[in-house]
Amino acid sequence: MTNALITLLQAAAQPQGGSQTGFWLMIIAVFGVMYFFMIRPQRKQQKELEKFRNQLKKGDKVVTAGGIYGTVAEIPEGSNSILIKVDGEVKLRLDKNSIVRDYSDAPAQQ
Image 1 (cartoon, rainbow, N blue to C red):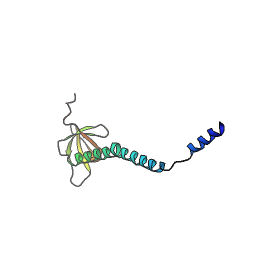
Image 2: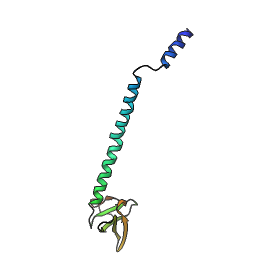
Image 3: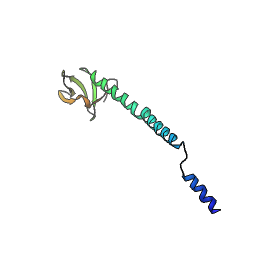
Image 4: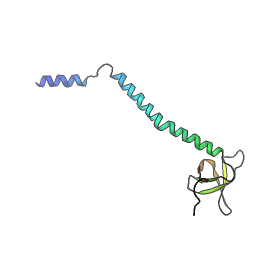
């Protein structure tokens, strides 16, 4: 009885032919799922954000990565910076990459 059990355990522990193909197919499937559910949507979002930043114009209402709300006052040509009007005559010069979204369509703040 114990000899039969040991023989069965040894047979189960030995790799079978064709398991290598299944292993590689599973690895490829995992990378495919990761690409379509994680990498591809992130790249699409980055392209849309870059397009938004390149289309900024004077008067656009924006929000920075730090949560500062302001209105675009000036965009110097050939520069990666932007000047936003925050409150009254207070203006901040920021890197364009710190602008994260437009809030023109958002309801008026109180």
